[in-house]
Amino acid sequence: MAETASTDDNTVIIKKYANRRLYNTRSSSYITLDHLSKMTREGVDYKVLDAKTGADITHTILTQIIMEEESNGEQMLPVNFLRELISMYGNSMQSLIPHYLEASMENFRANQSKLAKAFEDSLGNNPLAKLAEQNMAMFRAASSAFMPGAEKGDAPKAPSEGAAPTGESAGDLSALRDQMAEIQKRLDSLGK
Image 1 (cartoon, rainbow, N blue to C red):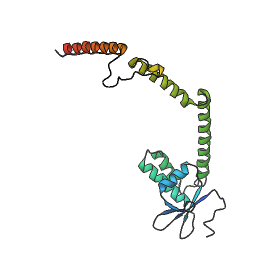
Image 2 (cartoon, one colour):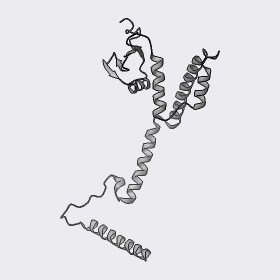
Image 3 (tube, rainbow, N blue to C red):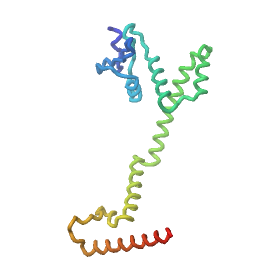
Image 4 (cartoon, rainbow, N blue to C red):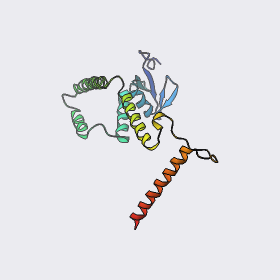
């Protein structure tokens, strides 16, 4: 049992049984590779142990998750990269590759954070809010073209059934009927 306890309280211990089931010891529930993938994206630190031997098999499980992701979705790892990686096994440089890849990923993440911050600073605190404001302004302009008064927030309401139209709405209705009749005449002349 000493192997299932973690030296770091933040590390979740996952046990893998012979029937290929994964058991999360923190939540006391069985999970899938999809759960582990989600935990990885959320930054949850976990360790996968073989339930029978207690051996750390985290590397194997992470590789399995990558294989699942590559086969189910958009492929992120180019074929040439995979070939180069495979060719490094057994090479005298093999021991340097893990450190190089870790450093490259750390640099990529740092640059990604810097780029996101620069983008956010150039557009203000919340670029999505500015886009939403522009979209709403365009929507209001478009709706005012089709519904008079929509820009003020008081869209015209349809008269209730049985109610006689007021003078203004009766005039609007008459104008719309005239426009529809004119459009129908034009369509009829085009069809001949």
